[in-house]
Image (cartoon, rainbow, N blue to C red):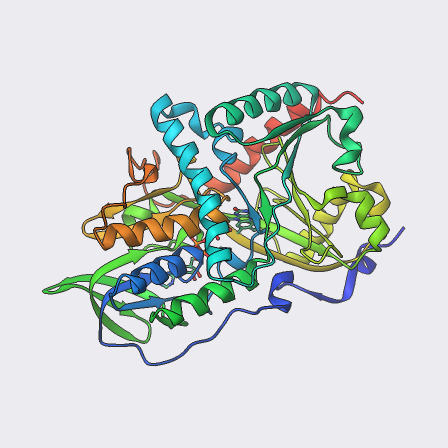
Length: 438
Ligand SMILES: Cc1cc2nc3c(=O)[nH]c(=O)nc-3n(C[C@H](O)[C@H](O)[C@H](O)COP(=O)(O)OP(=O)(O)OC[C@H]3O[C@@H](n4cnc5c(N)ncnc54)[C@H](O)[C@@H]3O)c2cc1C
């Protein structure tokens, strides 16, 4: 058996696997003095907002504190959802049936929107609609997933297959799960190539993109707002905040509503094609029914396994996380015991207190945040919706722009919320583990 040192490949690094093909971008051009709209945050949400705004004929500057696209968007698993998260995370338990239906329908619309955007703009994104397997951690979870699958079928018309444990090897070469469901309307893309294509699209339409311009303050001014950054200020009639899991204290209203939670992923070294075909036949996306779930997928070129979860209650260095995630990978596939890890990276997902993303306006500032780890399609779509709202287009109505956006019941940012929540999740999963019969 390999010792822990041998498990990290010689070229191990803590950047996302995705960045090898399409690194994030430095864009240090001088900031303009005045634009119609400043977009804060250069992820999928900021990019699609900018592309839509520029297409609507207004001048736009996208500002990012770091390199363009170095936030959650290019750190994700790249799984393209049609909205199941609302159901499987029980986010819907607090929503009225009518709102639930609108949220689910619009989540499905976000999936269609992304597919249409990629096709119509010929975006290089390695998008592949493969379906997703939701694995049941226990037999009880299997029954729950079947019921959730039924709800998804009824409300959104997606195609759901129930996979009994005896048939499970048709979707995952592992006995770890107790069956599950497959949803066909689900896909995967290359996170960083997709982001690069969105940057190109936003620029083609006329938006200006600026890296290393952290917004430190937003002040009211005669014409709207003065957006003060670490390298100059811009006056703008409107501001769109698209900071998701990287939301800081610039707008305290959002900081009280968005909880950044780190999630980690590893990429294995390349595996033999026949082994890959056995581990994930059909190359579907995979996740499971645990609170601290595993999310697993083949790389778009089918050569590696990408495996994500939160390995510990507190944040830890990536090299340490790599070994812990490798151990979890081996729980699913014992035959990967000796397989090396080439990358381990982390990114921040944006949790909200009602588990639902929100767009809207507060004190004249527009925002689109809080995708709860489900943002590839959704934040792409919500970027376009918030832009339509700024443009006052008649088709701007959006179910994610309804209802109260609940703030923290605990007041301002609380450093202990995440470790406390992670500990509760862990305890819940331990109890559930007692229900695993083999
Ligand atoms: C590890 C991980 C795995 C995930 N896996 C999936 C998945 O498989 N499927 C899925 O659907 N979703 C997934 N998600 C969620 C989703 O991909 C992202 O959260 C989503 O892309 C967020 O996009 P965004 O544009 O809203 O924000 P981001 O891409 O996070 O961009 C926000 C940007 O705002 C910038 N910013 C913040 N504050 C300031 C400031 N004051 N001034 C200037 N810039 C600022 C940040 O630097 C950052 O670049 C995952 C997320 C993570 C982190």
